Image 1: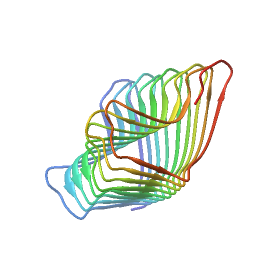
Image 2 (image 1 turned 60 degrees about the vertical axis):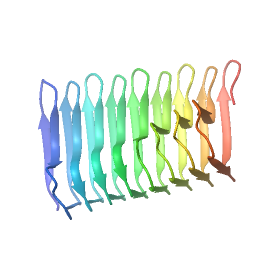
Image 3 (image 1 turned 90 degrees about the vertical axis):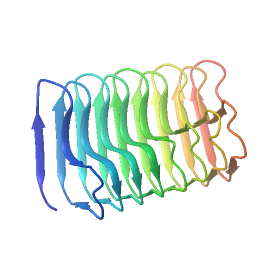
Length: 232
């Protein structure tokens, strides 16, 4: 707790905090983590881990190119991510929070900002994530196209996405507040979220595609602003 971690590198694959190899019950709290490199920079990486808590950290991952991650989890269970302030910045494919094969995640009251100079920036990306609660987060994205506030894919199911404030702003097209995609991404509840998207055309508040079934969208407030056509 209460550590300041600054990594300045001219190369890639830099990690601020790494917890791995079947560790359990770790607490990461009140740290300031700043990453500067080219690509593949990670503020916090959690792999093969259970019951970790990531709370009240300031995480800044600023790469000069792509693939910058604020928090990255892989093969985890019971992770608690709360009250963090996370910023990522690079060209494209910046991820504030990336969850892969991670179940029973509680993620709430985080403030998330992504400023990418290119496309495909993500606030929260969920792949193969089940039985998790994503609530009361503030997510702001800025880039060119394909900004995604929350994306669920690859058979993520039985998740609750509620009471989040999402702004997905791109200078061109195809920006989404929430994207639910790919077969097996089923039985998710999307409730009471406030979503604003903007760009040129083909901007979506919530987009379901690719045989995503039995998802429930209830009482969400959505506004799409496009300077051209086909905004939904």
